[in-house]
Length: 100
Image (cartoon, rainbow, N blue to C red; front, side, top):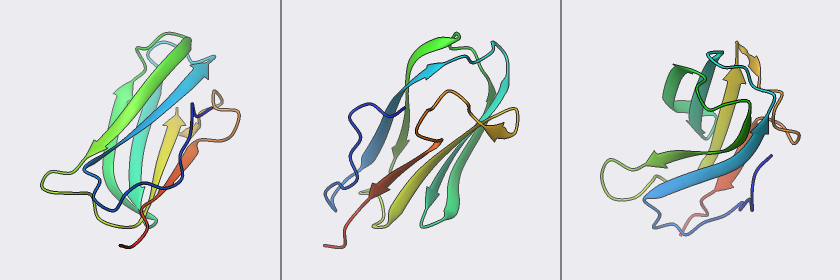
């Protein structure tokens, strides 16, 4: 479940941080993080879960130069190829960068 979610941020933003709590995840389960911009994947990372079975975690996306492009950002989290069961509100967080 997201912690203090926001759905908009300033056009001149160089990074986004999605912070959330989780429960019931298995150690070394395969999990995938996908950041999307306007529905298209822009950053994907695959790992083995090593954060424990419950707690809090944050995922970041940082512009390589300047600011992040304007658009709708989604963070998709999957565990063992299925949506993570740990987030009661779903596995997608929407962050909207309004056109300036």
